[in-house]
Amino acid sequence: MPITTPKDMFARAYAEGFAVGGFNVNNMEIIQGIMQAGTAEQSPLILQVSAGARRYAGQEYIIKLMEAGLAENDLPVCLHLDHGQNFEICKDVIDGGFSSVMIDGSHLPYEENIALTKQVVAYAHDHGVWVEAELGQLAGVEDDVDVEHSVYTDPDQAAEFVGRTGCDSLAIAIGTSHGAYKFAGEAKLDFDRLEKIAALLPGYPIVLHGASSVPQHFVEMANQYGAEIGGAKGVPENLLRKAAASAVCKINIDTDIRLAMTATIRKYLAEHPSHFDPRQYLTVARDAVRDMVAHKIRTVLGSSNKI
Ligand code: G3H
Ligand code: 13P
Ligand code: ZN
Image 1 (cartoon, rainbow, N blue to C red):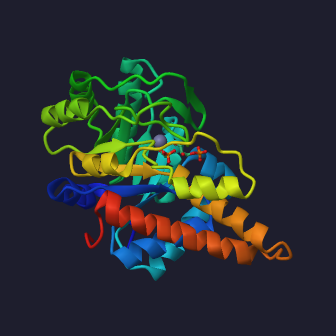
Image 2: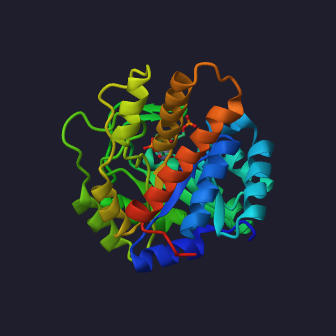
Image 3: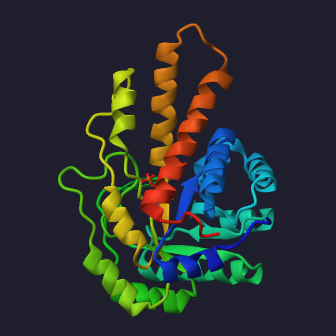
């Protein structure tokens, strides 16, 4: 199946109360693990590439790996730029064949965010490419952007922002954050705010960043085999399921992939001290990504059998 845009995925996700996973990809094993899970679950997928992933793997490699995955798996898959920082990066990946881009002007003053988003929307729509924008700020580290305190999205401003920019989906801040340390105390999301935004933008797809659940069995496994990841805490799966059943059509997951791979590789190497062939520990890491993503699709996103 050729690369698709999120349009039909999100229309169905909105109508049927599920969300599509926006999974961050950085190398072959991650792409293969996610694609295997998507095929096993017959789920649509969004594979997303950050600026860091482009620096690490190189855009050409990532695109070719994704194309290889698409040739082997008959699934609707969208290739998405995660946290595009400026117009040039967005243009570059649109010209390179991505079907969706995020322009992240959330760190800019409101009017500058609008102007930048409009510029990307004009170019992207000319090329049939979807645009995700962001309003409000998540706490934590977003690639090159480090936000110390979150600023929740204002519902009226969100509606105005969508109207003025013409962006196709909107990432909002309602309490999630990037990384493995999301909540010092009780995990909470501002569902009232989400409902207000959804009421002002009926039928419009909302995106949740920073939505890893930080599975404790991976944290414990990593720590048992030498890691020091104390106090890591994610968004509970029941809150994500509730969000997926609402206007949230895309849920971003990166940290859980990192944890699945790292915990599994640490365990494998500790239990097989004489092994040094990367294919051995990368095989179990890839399987861990596959199983974690399949679980996520089935029980959190609800996107199984929605292709
Ligand atoms: O939003 C951030 C994603 O987890 C990507 O992280 O920029 O380190 O690749 P990265
Ligand atoms: P996590 O750090 O919660 O996995 O969030 C990833 C993300 O939002 C990528 O844009
Ligand atoms: Zn993000």
